[in-house]
Image (cartoon, rainbow, N blue to C red; front, side):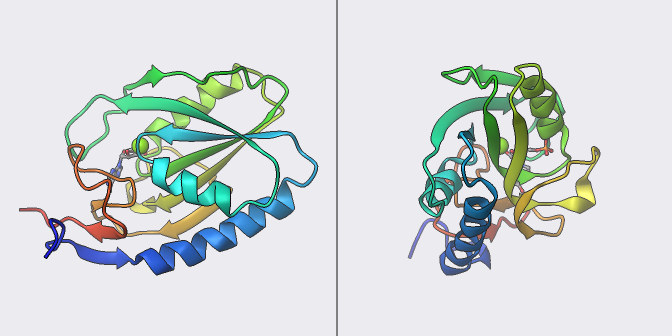
Length: 176
Ligand code: IMP
Ligand code: MG
């Protein structure tokens, strides 16, 4: 018995591990010889990012950026606030943004606009999940884990009202 028994598994820990291995190999090929910084977007991507960087066979820097969107428990409003900024400038560096999920795309659109003002050499996006049915802004995701239907998912870093982040798989939370 676990506290998350009511969740329906969408991607198991093993499926996630395998996909991250593929993403890591792809990133390793693309970033050869580049001075790059992986930017983990908190809190949602902390688990994904920690596994992803270990699947990348290159020297890299890791930094964190905390974002919080005002809104309800399962909806974004597009009003985004930086709760904790990067520890170092990214000017002249290649930035790889690591996000848990691109849903409406409003958070990522805000973030990209903000990062570009800091004059990085390049900005690419790696997102574990994409929910294209809900897209309000077109976001080109360079490295994508899985494309999912319009369902609210939790686990592997993703939360519902700050709960379920520590669930080892991605599961669907039934609307009760
Ligand atoms: P967007 O601005 O609508 O793209 O939403 C992005 C943020 O909303 C993500 O970084 C998540 O924190 C949160 N989010 C969107 N969909 C889900 C979901 O299905 N489960 C948990 N969090 C979600
Ligand atoms: Mg998030």
